[in-house]
Length: 243
Image 1: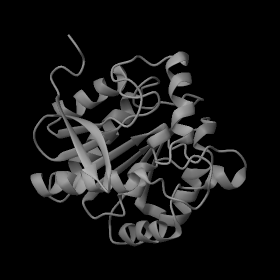
Image 2: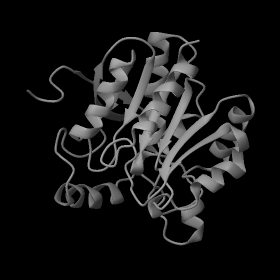
Image 3: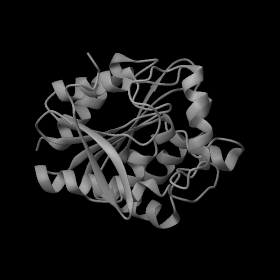
Image 4: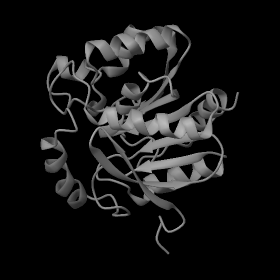
């Protein structure tokens, strides 16, 4: 049986951009944004755990082949395409990836349908910072950054950059000051994350909840899964979305 066979396929359009989506579950809304190379079995498996915890989960399909396992070949087939895509800012500093506009629209739509204090948004690796960009919109009440890796950490400036425009960074600061917390997960030795956790602590202080694991792993919730990380994410969603 296909890993997505029990999910309802749909699509969402915003600002002239359309992406497929997969949806499952009931309860408060959570958007889980996949890492490179795409909607792997591990990403889908994590999303199933969120569904089982009592949430309506939406999986945007932004790139790659759904259900293709993680492998060097799968990464190699996707990475060049996303690096040249206009939807993703991979090298420039002080810019928000354009896909954030589409993701914010998806969050607003889900929140308008389901109600409650807002929706959760979780990004991983290449998409890790997108949940922070989504936080600009008040529809997002529980942003989670799992090993955020954009822009690629080539040099000190990129390693510290949050993949946000100055205006969006100001909006994030304002929401954090108003009580919206941000959960971040990483391995301490993960070079792909650069010094972004230090930047987040500097910019939003105690509103940034740092969950750090020893070692040089990368994918905290999937390939190099830490159960403590999964538990912290589910507890964060429960605290923020079940009021």
